[in-house]
Length: 640
Image 1 (cartoon, helix red, strand yellow):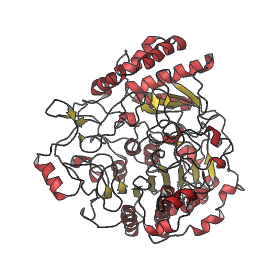
Image 2 (cartoon, rainbow, N blue to C red):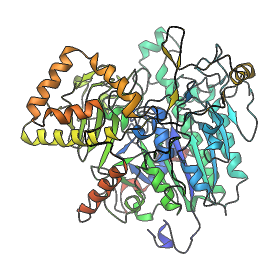
Image 3 (spheres, rainbow, N blue to C red):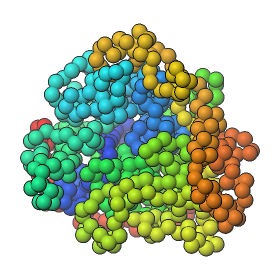
């Protein structure tokens, strides 16, 4: 879509491709931004929100690596890497034959850069960022490391290696330097030397505010203490929430400084900037998802519904300060793949077919172009359903039996944990939810195979499970959602990894430390590729390895779950066959190619073409969201 040049947005008068910037935070809670919690200080994000669009219904996967895989490939996590094996097993991460977003952008002239967390595989060179389309990369390859020493939390052949990867500067020990400071400096350097006439893509994946709780002292000193006085008096320095708040402030300052550098370079007016979290905050830390239930590793809203916004000069003036909410405002993290390619006028798929080593087609893109919705050309999102998790494949700590959102309803199977509230503070901030109905953070919700059903529009805090007393209408809805879940389950795909056997014949995923590559890697002291072998076959797709693992999981379920399953079959009257097809793997009619998922969504969009547009909160020019609050007077660039 094209917008008039004087109203912002894409314009025929300026046909050059826009600059694209994606800020991804790690484990940020729903209530850890100031527009959800006035006690949280995020002035730079506030400014972006006031100048852009708040996405109130933005969803990601319940854990980090699958969300990143979905963002960069446009696939649902269950079509690329739901199992999260991205470290020492050979393979894992994102299948080497998937073409990532930066590779497609690079083909139409973009300068593509990555700073920060990777977590999309690193066992072989073809899985590293620069092999996936990034011209440069400065960051860390695994899921977590120490902010200061940069040592990985994952043991590699008996050592905790330094996890710091760079292409501009060779990986080296940088001493006691905060890692998000390194990534901040790298981003500013990239912007400073960039030619604004060349389209620019920056994927800035911050480490903050992921555990461990570490932050520069200067930010800690300037952060208010929100812990109870009794706690800090008894154990001075033990206020974890204060450290976490300082980490969020640091991340906010990084985003502010990078945004200001883009403005100073004259690139902002032709830029599209997105901010989001990769999942909800985990329950074991001071992260805050209130009033949403659940957190990281859970399909409850607190685990998958994340803070997000869109900003930049491409946002039309009449859309700035708008909040998009409700069941017609869904955006999934995989949608940014199609959206970025659409605004960049780049092909959605590579010219060559994407297949595994056997020639079997890899799952096609699931993401949808949401720019017509964001820009205001249409009044509703094309996304009408979101499969969240598939089957019993997900390993601990968060196994679940599958979850999906269709319209205003969410169906969850299996056990959801955490299902409580991830903080014990701020109850007074939400009038519709009081401290009397707060739940312990690590509380589990057992949906069994019957399923839990929530109307997440009328009941966004998931207080009322509609399944136990379901009437004919809700039984029909559950059957329809179960059918859609079964459909996606049948097309699930997992990026392969290599399993070795130990001396007792047990599966192990650790590398063979006797190989020259692994020995050289361990001796170097720096984490990186440790094998020249590839894992690109289809031996770990749902119909093969996953089916066995999932069957094992089901046969060990308690007799109570089996009883619930039998009761559900009788009560829902949808026939045992449909249920068994979902549990056992592929449907009896053969494998379903996930391209049919795409056609179903497109068909649904066409059916809804005449749907009435919904009221946009703050859409009128006089909205309070169209102005920057007084707190933004402190939202200035700051030297970190």
